[in-house]
Length: 182
Image (cartoon, rainbow, N blue to C red; front, side):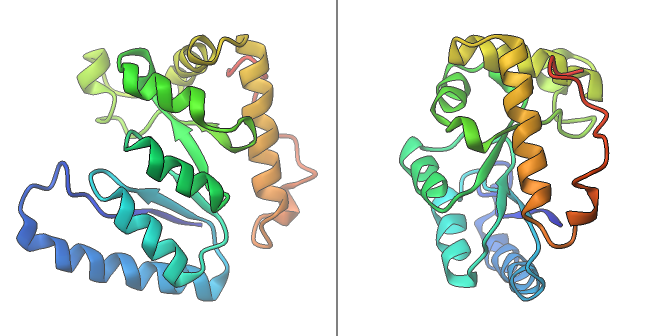
């Protein structure tokens, strides 16, 4: 797997850095394409450019990290077969709740991000334990049970592993994840 890689035109406000970002990103996409690896993507503020790059480099499997961009680009990424992680922001952002509801069940994953990512929402560092809150937030946004979301996410993770030649030997192994997100 290669990631998290991508473009950031939101948190990185200096547009003079965008060409360098793009050069590095495209180098990594080229490597991922040659090696048939899953790519985890950062798309903040550059969602359309990332979608176009995936097409140019023929990336078969992508996970879009904590997507909060436009819904039309989300739909384009869905059409390409991308998976999407939803993070703690689902508890605080109406738009991210809409995104979480729009992601097809077969493409939904969860994440807690790095220790610093959730800080703005929780006033504490992110930890893996936050995934329980994320699952509850997704369940609320989708009108589903926590157990159903946990089962969907676990099934999607298993499918992603099963379809990856680099991870195929993990398919039969027990994943230490409970359907309720624990």
